[in-house]
Structure formats: structure tokens, C-alpha cells
Length: 156
Image 1 (cartoon, rainbow, N blue to C red):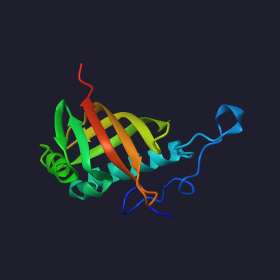
Image 2: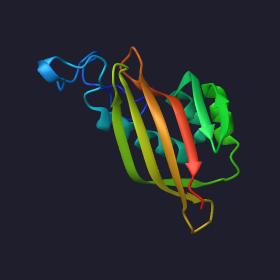
Image 3: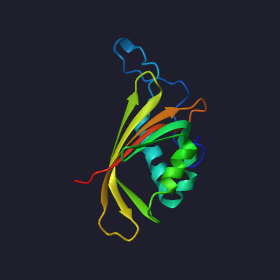
């Protein structure tokens, strides 16, 4: 089994090009990832484990031209995204996922992932609430990488 991205968790679409057979009339739905929930949850687990332990390794999680919107600020390109994430003003962080909702993206062999959770930052005992949305794009190898990433703290 191959990883969601280049290394780590073993989640990928079952059989390259395999289609869901949910469409009316018994025809498969072209470009639908059958195990989208497993793909999304596997990506999220691997992403946050990597983020929490060594953010500099996250470049493998992103497509080369990926787009990140972090608290309203856009950054494009895997290398630039990692520079942005590494520059965040904290030393230690722990993501606690509360909910992870996943949808297949019809006709695209992609997966939309919406995450809500808590962040424990440095020595602060009060968790910060966050929401993050990923669009995962399947590569020709069968692996999934992030093409779009939107992050917001839920401060209110």
C-alpha cells in the first residue's frame, strides 16, 4: 500500500481508476473515489502528526502549486506554504481532531475534507478552536496530496 503522500500512512484509492457504482441505472460514477472517508481521515491523521512533530516535512503533503489560505492570508506553492507554517510563532503544537467530514469530488478523483478541532499551543492550557478544509487531489501514482488548504481559528 502507498501513502496518502510520499511517506507514512497507508491509504490510497482502491485500485487506480476504480469507480463507485452508486449512480442511477447501475452505471459507475466516473472520477469518484470509493473510499473517500478513509482517504480523508488518513490524510488528516498523517498531516497533523507531521505538523505537530516537524512542520518542515509537510512539503510532501502539498502539490507543487498548492494554495493555502491561513487566517485570510494566501500563500501559493508547497515550498512557500512550508515556510509560512514553519514561521508560525509557537514552538510546540498539538492538534486534537473533533470532527472530520469527507466528501468525494464528483468527476475529479478528489476528496474534500473539513476538520474541526482544538489546538494546544506551547504551554497554554486553554485550547484554541480551529477549522480547516483540504481539497485532496489524486496523483497518477494513486497517492493523494493537498491542492487547496484553508485554515481559520474560531475566535469569537
